[in-house]
Image (tube, rainbow, N blue to C red):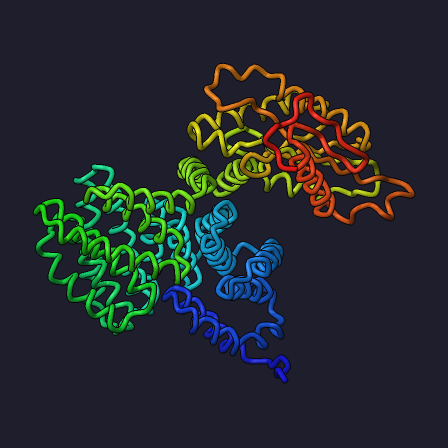
Amino acid sequence: MRPGPARVPHRDLEAALWRLLSATDHEDAAAFLAGLDEVESALAAAIEPRWPAWRNILTARRALLESAPEAASEAVAAAREALDKRPPTPDTALAMAYLAHVEVTADRFDSAMLLAIDASLLTEGSPAPAPSRALHQAHFWLSRTLTGLDLEELAVAHALRGHGVALQLDDLGDQWRLLLLTAQQHTELAHTLRRRGEINRARELARIAIDCATTARALACEPEDADADLLDVVQSWALTCRDHLDGALGPMRSVHRRVQQHGGVWLRGYADLAFARLLALLAARDSKPAFGEQAIDLLVDASGAFAAAGDRRRYRHCLLELGQATAALGRPGEALHWLEAYRADTGRAQARSRELWAEMFVRRSRLREAERQAAMLRRHALADPLTGLGNRRSAERRLGALHLSETPLSLAVIDVDRFKEVNDATSHSLGDAVLKRVADLLREHSRTGDEVYRWAGDEFLVLLPTATEALAVVVMERLRAAVADTDWSDLPLPGPVTVSIGVATAPSGEGAATSPVGWRALFDAADLHLFSAKRSGRNRVQAPGGMLPSADPDPHASA
């Protein structure tokens, strides 16, 4: 029988939290799960307001490690609700930053981005928070999250800020960890810039990374073996980025051999990746195909390690580099295999998140006052940058404030038919043009007072206040016809652009007792009708009372 909750001193719970964060940092799933098992009862019994958020955040990470995405999503939602009630403290910033890292691990980039924006604002409030371990760790996890979003410039900035906080504290171990992180982030950014051809800046960043590594070694601190090995990998990689290839080869071989014997799964993958990149440069410089073959073998091993460790970002990097490396060796069939795998694992949502992040942070860097920072960032967080519509977050806020039983209200979910074929046959830029025009048509042909949102990808949502089912179907049929009748000939598309629409209505009065409870149930009902419209031929409106067929059903639709 599982023991009941046990009260433990606050300091013991605090120490357990730091151990769990450290286990996450080291990608040590076994240590994390064992540590959470030990403290779970104490977390459940903790009465201090900060612990409900942490309990749900840690539960979300456990669920991801145990391959339970639905449980993870529920825990994340509960954590965010608890965080919304917390005061703007460094501990709240740390919790948000760590939860953002959890969301990156789950490939939920938009959610991670918004959490990190909020955490970043808390770390840079006015007046500035006093130096504390929570503040330094908030910067640490923000840096890790930004790396996962491929925003390496911002990751470097937060690593430097975290190191600045750590220097004001007494813990040499924290200073050492931030020096390691700063060296790592500078090196990874140097590698990215080198690939873009910005050689001089890459070399300068690599020099800073080497200086950070040297400073870390001078501290009177004994790091864990895994951390010391990671620092050796980073320093050898930094030498590579400075084009000191021959000087990097010996140290890289040595630390790679040591890591393969004693390192964890993630660290082995990281050492494989760094060594493969060095060998690829040597193969190109010295015309040695054997080095190229060895680099490919290392990249294959690294991709397997990152997949096992749940590091999807670096897993994708390995797939891309495998495609490039095998193409360079004249093996196009194999290169195509790796590049197709890379393409399948890389979603457009991540690229859109990076663009939105960059825009928001550029704007934020120009603001002087924390109140103005928060107002502008939150406004942008609620708007879709491509279409100008409200985004999913703003839609959820609006829907959450509805009282479905007071007056009739309808909800429509709209999906662009066969949109994937547009991107596959043309380009993402052409797909974006289609989405923007569809958004404009929805705005233009909706009723005054109706609200249009971009829900996700090629899916839109229209909220129709006071609309009965019959009226909503008429309005949606007008929108469907507007898209179908539009002249799309100026765009080189593989076929006509149409939309399918699902409608659901929450009745008032006597019918309210049997209507969907809550907006999520209303959305799910509309989404099911959208699915039915898709299966019934596309380019049509489906509601509980029936369906309005298109004038020209899709001949390729499934039965």
